[in-house]
Length: 103
Image (cartoon, rainbow, N blue to C red; front, side, top):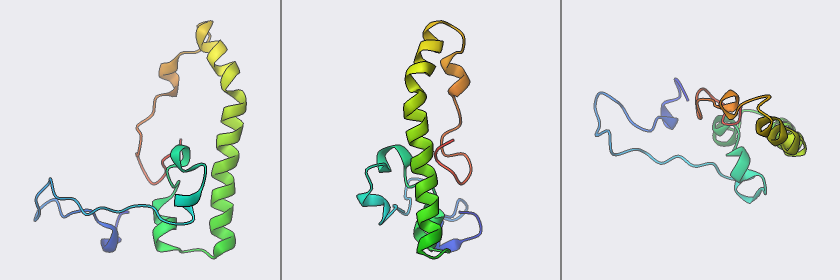
């Protein structure tokens, strides 16, 4: 979380690179059935709480909707991979690049 010092895991110039501050997502994410796929979606919104509950709920519903839609289409995607219409490599992404966890 760029420019938010409370959420820095370490200072690259002045600290041991093997000693990182642990920052974990909290509620409502930790009791959500989608956490293992969503990953907490936006750690910033979970920790900083910049929006009212309605805003946080909208973020959660958006992530849940995306996951449910992807699950629905997964059999077709697997079939297309098996038929060599598309490749698994087309789904590769740099995990944890930027603020979002799920692409």
